[in-house]
Amino acid sequence: MRNVPALLRREMNAYFASVLGYIVLIFFLLVMGVTFAVIVSYLMRGPTQMTAMRIMFSMFWLPSLVVTPMITMRLLAEEKRSGTIEMLMTAPVTEFEVVFAKWLGAVLLYALMWGLTGVYVLILHKFSGGTAALDLGPIASGYLGVLLIGQFLIAVGVLMSSLTKNQVAAAVMSFAVCFAFLLVLNWMDYLFQGGVVNKLLKSVSAFEQMEDFARGIVDLRVVFLYLSGTLWTLFVTTRVVESRKWR
Image 1 (cartoon, one colour):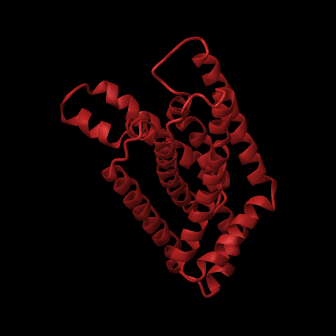
Image 2 (tube, one colour):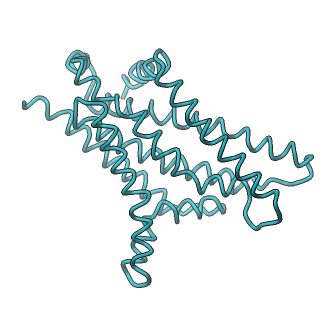
Image 3 (cartoon, rainbow, N blue to C red):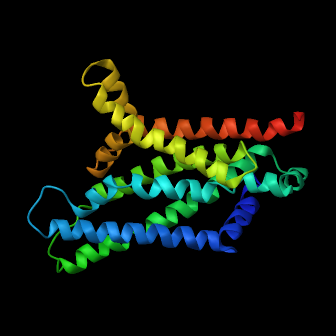
């Protein structure tokens, strides 16, 4: 893993040396800014049991569904299309180091985008006159949940990018898988009321898990689920990249 820092710098430079990183960042902040403004406007109408940050965390799927394919579509697909993947693999690096660095670069960009929304916490504190105590526990666990789910979706995006040379195809496949994981599983939860199937769907539902995180509940089983799912996905991606040797 000694080559990962150099590969990571290459990935971060690729994001911010072009307009892609800035476009994604502006899009994300625009969507979240509008969402936050709508939430605050709603809460000002009257008292409610929900907090602004808890509602915002419940909307995590909206930007993630679009942002994840955007930041992962080029990672391996563009390398294949341009032929730079062959040059990269002739360097003294392993396939896993390349895959891991690309995934980590995308995760850092994703974390940066969500980290910038931390200003909303300061806004809430400022406009409450400092009299409203903010429960930082649920806020911190909410960000943890967003990052856990996001890094798994990014791993899926990297896998989709490794399967094609076309960035658009990679984005479409990533969007389809993320859509199925985030929304279809949640909809199926309503189709199977009660029973073992319902319990199984709830245990893997990102919405149910995010609801717990937003309330300050950190279930280590969920943490393990996403981390192991990410490792498995990166392992499969590495095997896909390695398969080029046999073609």
